[in-house]
Length: 121
Image 1: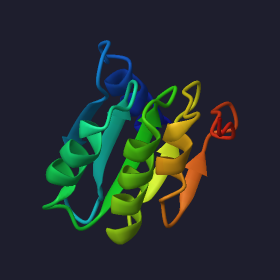
Image 2: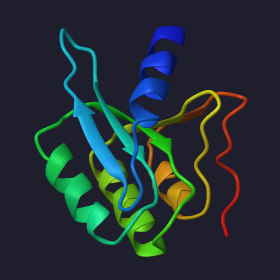
Image 3: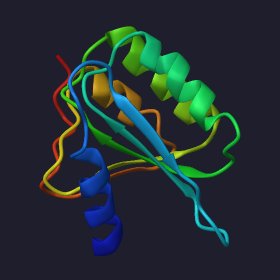
Image 4: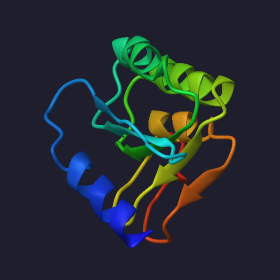
């Protein structure tokens, strides 16, 4: 789990300003794909998330976001729930505001104790 947490932290730290960066790392040998969502959510992120995850059947979605557009958060959460994905907030990362709505879409939700995914504004 430490390796995955470190890998997710590295991927999420590469975010730039603007729309969220949504990246997919394909899984292999029965391991689910890793989808990372980093940065402020904007409305078009819901469409991008849906398109990038369309071919996936199993995935863990990791978040690092201060929130953003509420509709985007809700729509990403709906996609996550419909696809039966798990959600995760890695150590020393956060998922607040609209991001928390997306995180809540996970059929199983995980958060490292130092992660924050509690604050719906």
